[in-house]
Length: 466
Ligand SMILES: Cc1cc2nc3c(=O)[nH]c(=O)nc-3n(C[C@H](O)[C@H](O)[C@H](O)COP(=O)(O)OP(=O)(O)OC[C@H]3O[C@@H](n4cnc5c(N)ncnc54)[C@H](O)[C@@H]3O)c2cc1C
Image (cartoon, rainbow, N blue to C red; front, top):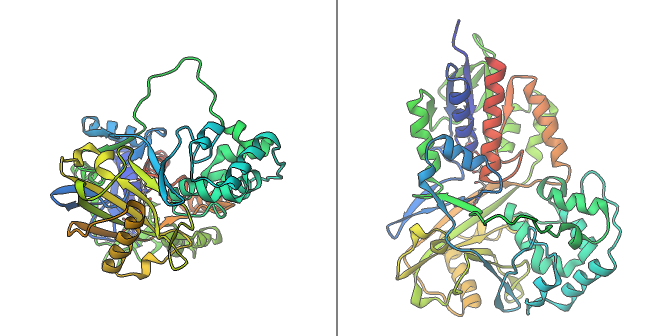
C-alpha cells in the first residue's frame, strides 16, 4: 500500500499544530509543511533586545481554553511553562491613569462598585450603566448582531467608548460596531437575546465551593515565540518535511494523488491538504473551486504594530503594579488628533524572566481596523510619535537606543456579523475536496483557539485517510 501524503500550507502555529496532531494520530502518513517565509511561527516570533529574548507577536496565552496548555504538555514541555508574573491593569481616562476595576466581563462592568472608583469616567457613562440596571432597554437581537449594537443599545455610547471598547476591541484590533457578538462574545449575545439588564445577566454567579485561583495566562521560558521553533525541531525528528521559503501559488488536480500543490519551483502531490494560510490567501488560492471559498477573501484584516522599549526604571514613572494599560478610542493627543496608542504592556512585570533591577521592558500597541495612521509612518517617525504620546500619559518618556518596531500588516482577521455562517459554508465547501481549513480566521483569534483548530483539522484528516 502506498503511503498517504498530506500537505499543510502555512507554517504558523495552526499548521504546526496540525502536523503535530497528524504525527500523533497517524504516524504512517507523510506530512509536508510549506511555509512562504524564511521561518516557521507566523505571528509567534521573538527577537533579542538588550540581551533579552522578547516576543514580537503573541506573548502569552489564556488558560481558560485548554488547547495550548494541552499541546505543551503533550509535547513534554510542561516544565518550561511560565505563569504570568503579576495581575491588574490601568486605563487612561481624562488625563490620568486609573486602576482598571477587577471582575469586568470582557470589559463589561457588572457592578456599580466597579465604576464608583473610576474618577475619570464621564457622568454620561455612569448614567448609561444605571439605566441598564434599573430601566433595561429591550433590544430585538437575531442570530447575530454587532457587539456595539448590543452594548450601545443597553449602556449608551459613553460607557462603551470610555471603558468597554478598549478591552474588547483590543482583542482583534477591531471596532465593537463591526465585530460579531455571536462569535467574539457569545455570552453577550445570549444575554441580549434573553432580555433584561445586561449587567445582571453577565454577572458571574458566586461559586458554592471556591477553588484556589490558578494562573490565567502562560508563556514559555524563552518566550512564546519559542513554541514554533520547538515544534519545528520535534516535527522534523518525527519525519515531517518542513520547507520554508516555499510560497504556495496554486492548487490543481494531481497526477498520482488528489492534489498538486505548487510553489514557484516545486510541485508536491497530496491525498489531502490542510490550509492554514491567512483567510484571504486561502480564498485566493481556492476561490476557483467554490464561491464559498472565494468568500474568504472578504474577511477584513487589521494592521497593527508594536513598539518595544527598554528604558531605565528611574527615568519613567510607570505605575507601581499591574501588567499594562489601555488607551480608549478618541483619547486626545494634540491639535485635534487622537492617540495612535491603543494599549501598553509592562512586559518584564508580566514575564519575570525578562526583569532585572534597573530597566523596564514596555511594549506599546498601535493600530486598529479603522486606524492605519501608524502604517504610513516610518519606523523612526512611529517611535517618535509613540514617545510623544507616552510623555503625555506619563509626564516624560526618555529616548533610548533599545527599541524594536514590529509591523503586523493585515494580520488580524475581523469576525464581522455573520462570520460563523461564512466559516461554516467555507468548511463545508472545502471538505468536499479533501481540503481542511485551520487558523485564526475560523474558530477564534488567539493561540489556544488556533492550536485547537489546527489539531482538529489534523485529527479529521488522520481519521479520513486512515
Ligand atoms: C500582533 C499580534 C499579537 C497577538 N497576540 C496574541 C496574544 O498575546 N495571545 C494570543 O493568544 N494570541 C495572540 N495573537 C493571535 C495569535 O498570534 C494567532 O491566533 C496565531 O498565532 C495565528 O496562527 P495561524 O497559524 O493561524 O496564522 P499565522 O501566524 O498568520 O500563520 C500563517 C502562516 O502562513 C504563511 N503563509 C502565508 N501565505 C502563504 C503561502 N502562499 N504559502 C505558504 N505559506 C504562506 C505565513 O507566512 C504564516 O507563517 C496575536 C496576533 C497578532 C498578529
